[in-house]
Image 1 (cartoon, each protein chain N blue to C red):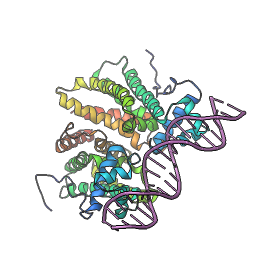
Image 2 (cartoon, rainbow over the protein chains, first blue to last red):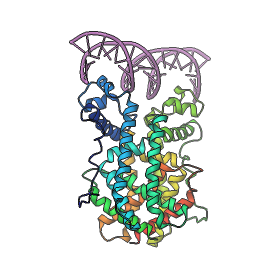
Image 3 (cartoon, rainbow over the protein chains, first blue to last red):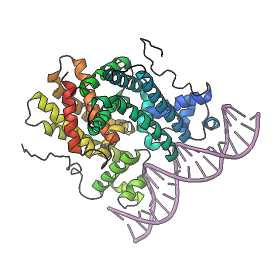
Length: 201
Length: 201
DNA sequence: GTCTATAGGAAGATAGAC
DNA sequence: GTCTATCTTCCTATAGAC
């Protein structure tokens, strides 16, 4: 396990796609979908973003829906793997809460555009695609519940607090404005402390 | 001032529209926009919802955009007036926080469909409409900041805690599923207590 | 693999009868 | 005020040249 004072902030997000048009189009789609929403974004917006004709897109992706699925899957897998990595080697329940909330919040601040897509465009996914995404989300929620479980007796209380704390991180995607909002790492630290206060009662 | 053990939950939301097609269409639009999103909803969806032909809609609203503006304005004004009403006659800072968070959360649970529209479709508003809505939002945010201010020394800390607590309530609109989620009043009480813990540090 | 051109279809809004 | 029919525009996706 590698330890570093500078935390990872998800820079390897797009590395699972080959360098070239396929990656560039996915990044463009994440940016455009995040800005305008899936249904308000046209394939022309995405193509223009990478300096390509509207038709060129279809050599690399079968449809606009497949583009949404691809970036949604990459985003969800990134959240899960970053959250998991943040917990590595930490055993104290309090510190695990801190690490999870910090990592989750930083991810949503750094990737606020992609975060909007993965959190608010679930209903735009085709049913088959949604099944795959829902499975990843269940894993992430299970991971969070596992981290918070040591602090609770009853399942009901655990469930409500888990939802509430994830809400803090997810809602960052809605309001975050680069430049005008706090630095992601500062925000992540602050929210991790908030979560600890919240759970202390 | 009227005091009641049963809290208001915004039942008078649509009363500012006359009974009849104009109100029915607004309610239908809130339901359909909330379910599918503004751009994925067609004027045919809305018309069918009230048993009207697509053309009939345009007798009562000039455009789909005006329908969005109307329900967004009604929703925002309702949040503001309910929040304000919840604070009436309460002077203890702690109790004011409790009342505000409780009311705000209940509103987003009870009106989760409309809440999705007012919180997540801001970018779908036309610029002129957005100006009007943004002014109401500033009033609501100012009200919240005023309630939380007595508990903070520095503005930065006030700002962050205000955003965080409003996030809890707003995000309810994203995940709330009637029947499967807690009763709105139970949730409102629970979140009000959460907020108090959160601010106690 | 990229382009230009366009097919095919759906959506917002209007025309005009009743 | 509501309907049926339709206009116009725009968007996804494909065809076919290079």
